Length: 433
Ligand SMILES: *[C@@H]1O[C@H](CO)[C@@H](O)[C@H](O)[C@H]1NC(C)=O
Ligand SMILES: *[C@@H]1O[C@H](CO)[C@@H](O)[C@H](O)[C@H]1NC(C)=O
Ligand SMILES: *[C@@H]1O[C@H](CO)[C@@H](O)[C@H](O)[C@H]1NC(C)=O
Ligand SMILES: *[C@@H]1O[C@H](CO)[C@@H](O)[C@H](O)[C@H]1NC(C)=O
Ligand SMILES: *[C@@H]1O[C@H](CO)[C@@H](O)[C@H](O)[C@H]1NC(C)=O
Ligand SMILES: *[C@@H]1O[C@H](CO)[C@@H](O)[C@H](O)[C@H]1NC(C)=O
Ligand SMILES: *[C@@H]1O[C@H](CO)[C@@H](O)[C@H](O)[C@H]1NC(C)=O
Ligand SMILES: *[C@@H]1O[C@H](CO)[C@@H](O)[C@H](O)[C@H]1NC(C)=O
Ligand SMILES: *[C@@H]1O[C@H](CO)[C@@H](O)[C@H](O)[C@H]1NC(C)=O
Ligand SMILES: *[C@@H]1O[C@H](CO)[C@@H](O)[C@H](O)[C@H]1NC(C)=O
Ligand SMILES: *[C@@H]1O[C@H](CO)[C@@H](O)[C@H](O)[C@H]1NC(C)=O
Ligand SMILES: *[C@@H]1O[C@H](CO)[C@@H](O)[C@H](O)[C@H]1NC(C)=O
Image 1 (cartoon, rainbow, N blue to C red):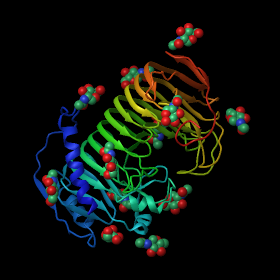
Image 2 (image 1 turned 60 degrees about the vertical axis):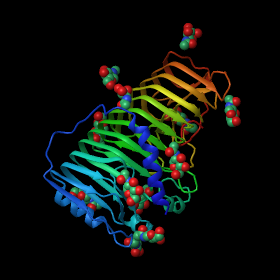
Image 3 (image 1 turned 90 degrees about the vertical axis):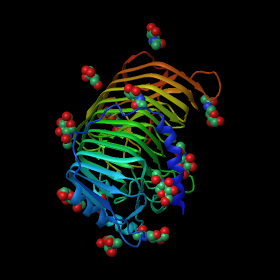
Image 4 (image 1 turned 135 degrees about the vertical axis):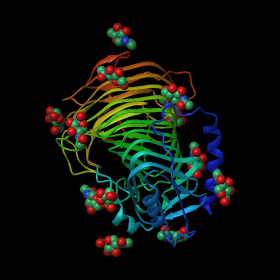
């Protein structure tokens, strides 16, 4: 069976990579003694839903206890809504495999609370330690979804694999996420968490990557540290959305996707949202489109989220990206597009009321397939300002020619670089035209 071979593959592939690295740099967990342990019994067949046994285990051991999953497959055919945990250890040595009854999920996925998104699994609580030991796996059975949605990116009810909602002072580590139904992970109303040694691979069985299988998305959350992630996908590697503050992303490798995304944001007319103090350091990119890119909605509202919207207010400020090494960027590693509008429609690229400022990129090296270092299409009504770009050493393809074009529109106060030409003006969900 495909599933067993992938477990073997990933356990053996992933261990040497993580094994050589030092211990985590932040540990928020308060000391505690675990009184109870609940070992979840697996039914052994997808004809019997394991979700009731999982719910029962959290009910018994979710406060001051351990919920342990054995090295076996758990068939999760119904939603998990596990909130209010306290001082809880989650020990995952097996696989949670999501059921494939699409009609069930479309009817029952749990609302996330933003962008009309929904999820299969809500997990929340304080002082939680979710440990997969480098091989515990969540498998979304994604290919059935990739086939079902026929390339549509947002499909109402298509669930995220997991949503951390109200998760505080916690550590999530050593987990593998495969073939997520949609976004792999969303994090909302969550604070002071470390997520470390996480491997995400949303490649389908035919080797293709599906749209909107982001690695992680944050909203209304602060003090989140993503350390030592590997993300293989076709969309945002890690994305910061509304009110994401004090987020750090370190020591990660991103394959194929779009790189780090700031946004989309400014989607809700009249709402004031910010993204502040995001930093990324020591990131490797293998054939991603960008290194770190920004996307905001235009100033006019067209339709409603998730696919429509616009007219939002706010700013992204004090963001730093350093030590970015790319192998074959597919587009401008540094990109800003303020043109996001209803899918398919052509928007007004100069009307966004969302301001981008105080953004620093440094030590950008490697190879690219284009001559563009930066493509910055900023709003006319709220021009971008104080963008610093220094220490760029990017060569084109396998030549010695340096990438040297910096294209811009409505950028004020550049530091360390000069604009070399006008940017192309047009809508695209992935930055640039
Ligand atoms: C899990 O079980 C499988 C087969 O039962 C075994 O091959 C594998 O080594 C086990 N993995 C771990 C990490 O114990
Ligand atoms: C159980 O697995 C079979 C075979 O893979 C599949 O056809 C069926 O839809 C699955 N059932 C559920 C509830 O996921
Ligand atoms: C989903 O909802 C529709 C419409 O309410 C209903 O007809 C269908 O039986 C439901 N399916 C499942 C699997 O719950
Ligand atoms: C999930 O659990 C929380 C807390 O008990 C509750 O407020 C919420 O309504 C539940 N959501 C669903 C969809 O059951
Ligand atoms: C939001 O999701 C609900 C249920 O998942 C769906 O019925 C509704 O059409 C969606 N709204 C939009 C604007 O997509
Ligand atoms: C991602 O998964 C695919 C399919 O299993 C595999 O071929 C590929 O090597 C994986 N990529 C990485 C970088 O681990
Ligand atoms: C990861 O990144 C941080 C911050 O840049 C750094 O201090 C740390 O040594 C790095 N390495 C590991 C293995 O965490
Ligand atoms: C988002 O942050 C802004 C600025 O701090 C604040 O005004 C707004 O109320 C926040 N929105 C929500 C929904 O928390
Ligand atoms: C930017 O954030 C850093 C911490 O991440 C802080 O020390 C500094 O004061 C902030 N600068 C501004 C201009 O807000
Ligand atoms: C685009 O927006 C700008 C700023 O709001 C406005 O001045 C301009 O007329 C708009 N262009 C079109 C074609 O609507
Ligand atoms: C780099 O190589 C790719 C693939 O062969 C090609 O499409 C692209 O045009 C090249 N880039 C430049 C700037 O020549
Ligand atoms: C940008 O242009 C100004 C004026 O021509 C020049 O003094 C400055 O050295 C240039 N900066 C860089 C980084 O090329």
